[in-house]
Image (cartoon, rainbow, N blue to C red; front, top):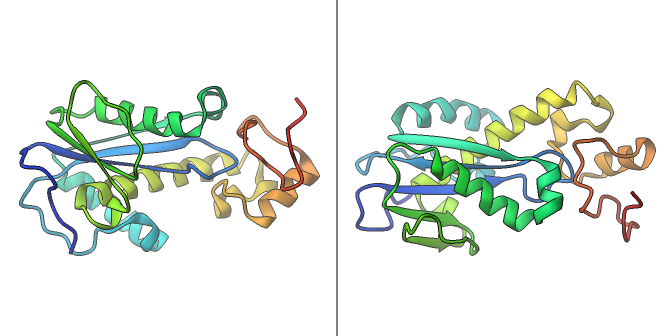
Length: 199
């Protein structure tokens, strides 16, 4: 079972992002504050769960959480500030929406920037260690997947409902055949042979 709290603070939030490695769509982050006494053996790193399990756990997390929020950062901004900065910005914006505001932040991974003078800790593979980060990973992933399924209807040839914008062989073949859309990240290497996208 995952650990409930990292710090001694009573209001601690976990934050994580989804979609960092995608070629299309937003990067999405969520922040979650869970009650300290919460026990749940099913909540885990979203990557370790099936899509069905994530969808079943999302309303459970939303019901049990003291507070939760998510934010999308769109491809134009990713291209402007780069994916690392966009991921951290998404986390900051998600945390900003929390009521109450956390006294301590735990972050999945090893990169973060200070936010509103709130102490924080980065934790590599934190989504497999702490409940609040795992919960944030589930919300970020399910919200992003739902968005990619919606825009799939606009450009079905890329099959985003299945690949969610990740660089699958099928997705890259569609880019080669049809070019790019307004949802693609132009700063990314969209095709293996591409050194730089001609704009």
